[in-house]
Every structure is written in structure tokens, then in C-alpha cells.
Length: 167
Image (cartoon, rainbow, N blue to C red; front, side):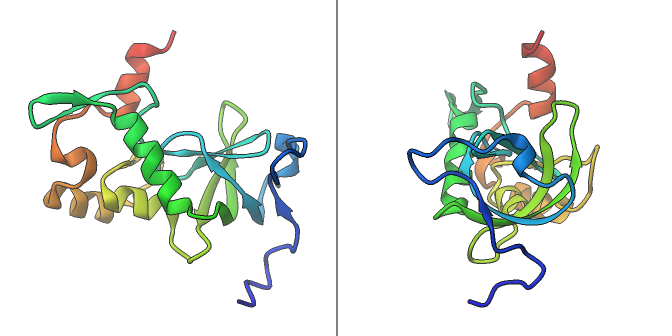
């Protein structure tokens, strides 16, 4: 494809075996393309940079949830869902902000043009992070009604889980 003319030609990220790009390699605002991997259900890694998806909150890596009468590793499931949506790992993003941990807050699309945050919420592996944005509230309502992902059982809101488990 011809791609978007607004995106720079450089692809940030890491071919296997090369040094990681520092976080400063990702622009503080505007559009960029990067090769990324899934850190968890709402965070991407582009070399040394961590990118936090805007408007979504997914279970933490160690978080468990309940379905069909038992616990399951919903944090790991959310990460797997993210990895599947990423496919080849090349994403087109726009930096919207920087969070209190120094991560770029981004909205990204995979190589097929799918909004990654919207798809995670639609599949039920993340919730709309209403405190910061209502962008994905419709997808959350749809996932909840269909009993997809986290909505198949019971789960603690990721922000509440973090509050209880972080010092």
C-alpha cells in the first residue's frame, strides 16, 4: 500500500539482535510508525520505549479473573489478545500525551488499519478507561452484552486491582 503521507518513512523499533531504541526515539506528539511487541493488554514496547494505549485499561499481567467456576490468568489472556491484534508488529500511531511514568500515550492501528484499542475492548480483553476517554464506551457495551473476554465471567477493574497490589 501507499500508506499515509503524514507518516514518516522511518520505522522505530527493533529488528532482532539490534540495540533497543531509547524512549526518546518515539516522538512526543504526532504520527509515527513503529515495530512493537505486546508488553501486556494495554502497553506496547518499541525497543526501549513503552507505549500506553489511550482510552483502554486491560488486566495486569499477574491479574486473575473468574469464569466457569474457576480462576484463569486474564492478564495473560489480554496480552495474548494484544499480540494477535498486532500480527506482524508494525503499527501506525499518534502520540497524544505522556503519562506520569514517562510512557507515550498513543492511539495505534495495526498493519490492517484496525484501531488496536477499539479491537481489544470489542473483544472484551480491555475496558474503556472512562476516567480518561469515552472513545471506546460503545465497544465495551457491545462486549459486555455479548459476554466476550472478561465479560464471560467476573473480574476486578484493572485500576482497582493495581491500587490493591502496588505499593
